[in-house]
Length: 143
Image (cartoon, rainbow, N blue to C red; front, side, top):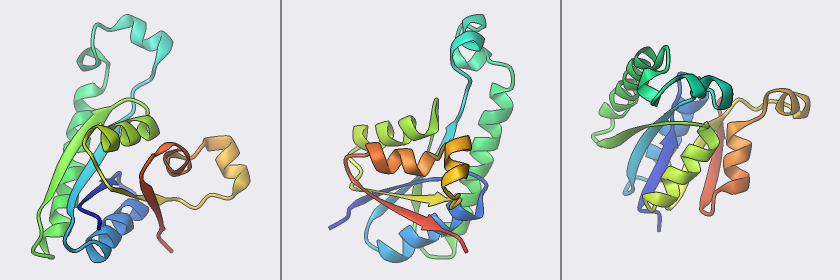
């Protein structure tokens, strides 16, 4: 039985479809929407004392909160509540880390459905999550 589901969200139709899927397929589960703010690593981070000092961090955090508010609104029609969370770092790593640290049974993630060449050029968060997560991951494509 699935008790806790993590749904990473961004502003894509695929993330919205993943949230909808989680709501439909896991009606008894607790659902958490997570947005990861990706900050550059390495060289750029040497010039700031913390993530809060990074140029554009405040705007990115405001955007994250707006995306999570949209997720809460999407769920409001279903008579269900969801939790929300914001993390910073590399999205795939942070998604898996958050899922493990908080005891999630399942991750439901949207994917852009890029073909092989696209994955090689751009990478794929969902593909990386599938490869590294110790729990079941459902990948949802929005047609």
